[in-house]
Length: 136
Image (tube, rainbow, N blue to C red; front, side, top):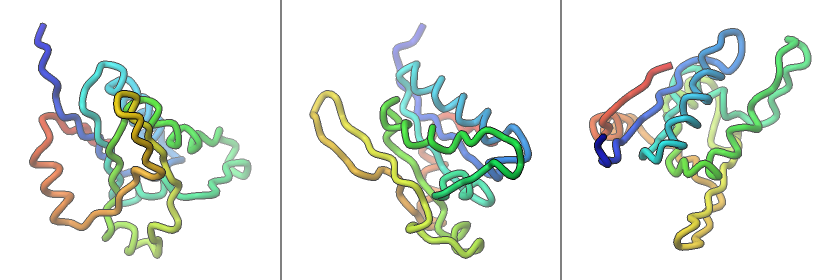
């Protein structure tokens, strides 16, 4: 078995509730991170709603799993990206998104928020630089 670290990009395109895509994507991200791969997560299209603050699922009778996103840094997920055009098309901005902290255990560096809003050119660059892309 190879010791090569692969760059995995998890592309989240679906709204957080109404289908299982968002929940399944989150589970797969956590599995990938557990196997010491370089994991990046990108939110585009309706997927940007997965990171919005103040989600309340009581009215739809589903468990709110959005707090789990805040723990991604604890699982060594260091790169979380949100497509700026997708946010703007939905009347959202970076201020509407949760923050995800990260602490590098080796360097003890703390980063308050690893959620980065990027433009379309950066989205393309990240996709091209990835070894494996999972789309949900």
